[in-house]
Length: 250
Ligand code: BGC
Ligand code: MN
Image (cartoon, rainbow, N blue to C red; front, side, top):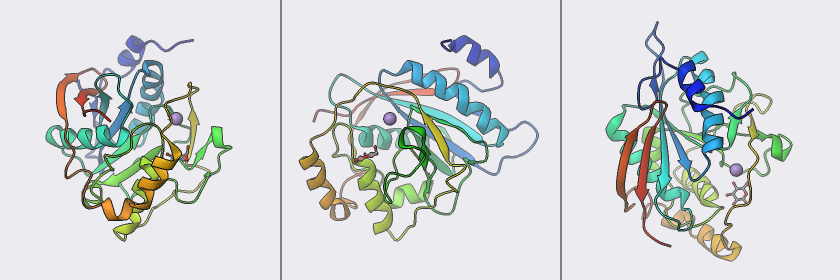
């Protein structure tokens, strides 16, 4: 049965407009901003909110949801919209950590904590689509969490990857190049289901590979420090704050 957004909103009447919630009976130890890159996947977004918000409440996380959408019909550039959303979120919410969360991944296990860690934390280790096994060692795609200062230290994501693929592999290099390590929770709990979706516009492999080879060299030159964008609007929805950003053309 398709999820009804009104039912989800009614279920979470205690979430403040803009998608913020804090435990009522204690001061949460962790304030976490969620950045969800989005295009044309309303069904996925509803199911993510439906499954994720109750997990965060049970984990007693103080959170705020930010959904960032790329303006226009150009090829997707996930790195750019995530960088833009991080910068805009900083103006609206005082957070210690940020979780970049794919819209099509729903958590399966409450023990996979969305709490801040000392190091960048890769949370989506096992995904049903990949038989719950990390496809390769350096993968950080899917659900990735940073301390705010670490995301700034790695200079955010690269702005140069248009189309599906490798902006996350570039991030792996950024993290390791800064001498940070990637923390991974136990694989039997860091598990997700991927919601079914159609193909996406995959970037040219040769372009991707060429970019990846210069990832370390580019890391301090381009990223969070030089992202150019126009924030076209900020909508305060009930369960999230919605940014629409113009990030230019490929
Ligand atoms: C891509 C990554 C992606 C991974 C898993 C790699 O080939 O470069 O962007 O996350 O596959 O799908
Ligand atoms: Mn996906």
